[in-house]
Length: 298
Image 1 (tube, rainbow, N blue to C red):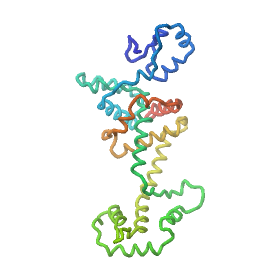
Image 2: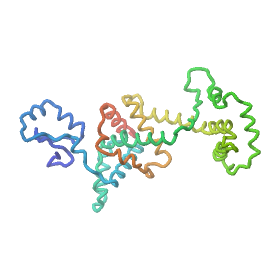
Image 3: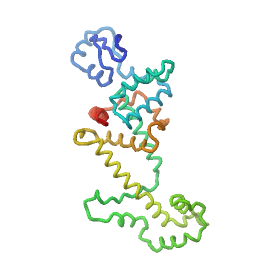
Image 4: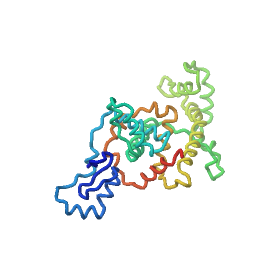
C-alpha cells in the first residue's frame, strides 16, 4: 500500500515500515526473513500480490506520452533523469490532466525500452523485410581469411549464367522506361517488367543491380552499429548483456532519421504497455541497463 506520509513510497502493513516503491525492492522485502516471520503473526488477512498494484487502466494519451518520454531518454540522456523529468512535467501545468498524470521512474523507463519499444521495432523490421533479399555485407576487415567477399557473394546472384545476364543488360535500351530519374526507381521498374507470359524479362540483371545498390549503405551502417556498440559497452561497462545493448542500438537507429520528437508509438506498443512488461527473470540484465543509461553522457 502507499506510504501515508509519502505517496511516492510503499508501506508494509506487516512490519509497519516505509519502502522504496520499486517492484524488485518490494519483492525482495516480501521474501526477507523478518517479513516472513512477521507475516506469520499477522492475522489481518492475506496480503495482496504486488501484481495487483500494477493492473490499473492507463489512458491511451498517457501511454503515448510516457512512451515518447522513454524514447527521449533513450536517445539523449540517462534513466536517472526519469523521476525528475516526471516531476517536472507534473508541475508544468496544473490544469493539464495529462501532464499531472504522467508517472515515470527508472524501472518503468527500462521496462518500456526493453520489453515494449524494442520488441515492437524488431517485429516491424521483420514484417518490412519479409521474403526480400538481404543487402550484402562485403566488409573484409572483419574476416580473418583471405577470401574475396565480392566475388563469392555475387556468384550466387548471377547463378553462373553470365551470358543470360549480359543478354538482359543489352536488351534494356529497347524498352521505354517510365521512371529513369533515379537508379532506385529505374531498377525497381526493371524488376517488375513482365512479358506476355507474365514472367520477369530482366530477372537476373535486376536482381544483381538491386543487390549492388545498398552496398555502400549497408556496410557503412554495420560499421556505425559497431561504433555505437563500443560506445555503449566499453571496459568500464562490460556487464551489459547483449540483448540490452541490442535494444539500445535498435531504438537509437530507429530514432536516427526523425528523432524522438516525431516518434509515434504504434498500436502494438500501446497493447504491450501493461503490467506484464515488468515480468522478467533477468534481474542482472535490468540492473546493467540501468547502469549503462546512468553513465551515458557523463
